[in-house]
Length: 338
Image (cartoon, rainbow, N blue to C red; front, side, top):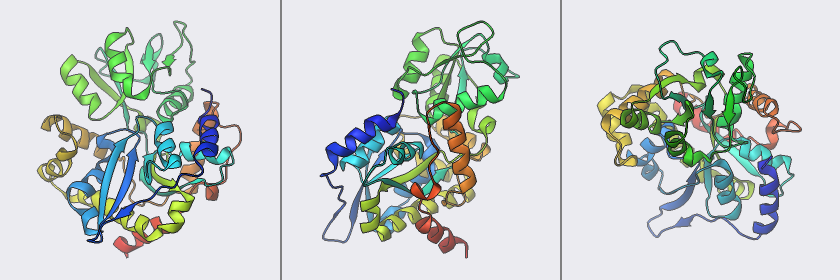
C-alpha cells in the first residue's frame, strides 16, 4: 500500500450514503461514538475527561472503539461507524488529497510530538540513533506517522536506510497492533512502541526504553480529533463541548498529584500495573507530549507535511485550511485562559 488515499478515496464512493449520527437520550445525554487509532496513555487527557466526569458535565457519553491504525479509524468516520476519530492528521491529508466530497476536518489537536519510544533488547546507556546502524528496527505501519517520523529522524541524523551493515534496517511491514508481538519473536534489536505497552514489555521481558522519538523529532501535530465536514457543520456546539471536556483533562494533568493522576487514568487501563501507568504518565510529561492550545498551527502542519514528503507519501502539499478548522479550538482555549 503506497498511500492511504487510494483506499480511502474508494471508500468515499462506497459509503457516501451512510450518515454518522450521535444519539440523544430522553435525559439530554448525547452518545458520541469515538474511534481511537490505538489505546495509549499518550491520550491521557481524553481518558481523564471520561473518568473524571468532564464529558458527563457536558452531557456527553462516550462510546469508544479502537481502530488499530489511522486507516481503520478514518474508515470508521467515513462509513458512519464513528462520529469522531482520534488519530494523526495525515489521514485527513490523504483523503483531502484524494478530493473527497464530504471531507474530514481536524477540529482539535491533542498531542504535539511523536508518542513512541525506542525499545531495545539490550542496554544502550548512551543511546544515539547511530546505535541503530546495522540493526533492524520495527518502526510501525508503512505510511503511518510513527514510521514516517522515525524515518525522518534517521535521515536527519545523516544515516542511510537499508539492509547493509552500515545502514539502518527500518521495517515498516508490521501492522501497528502487532509490533510488540513480532518484536518478541524475531531477531529485531529495536522497535518503537507507545506507552504503556513499552513499559509493560520491558518489565516482562527485561528490555530497555532507550529514547523518546518525540524528543528527537521535535514538535509535530501528531494526534487530533477529526470528523466528517457534514457532522462538524451539523454538530458544531457538540464538538465544542467535546473538546472542552478534553481540555479540562489536560489542565487536570498539569496540577494533579501522581496518585490523583493514577486514579483518573487507571479505569481505562485495566490489567496495567500502577507502576507502568505512573511511568508512562511521567514519560509523556517529561517529553512535553500534549498541546496547551488545541488549535493547530500552520508551522506544525508544515512540519508534518515535511515528514510525509521525506517519506515519499505526499505527492503534493495541501492547504492548511482544507484540513484544519480552528474555530472551536480557539473558543475552547479562550474559554479557559481569558
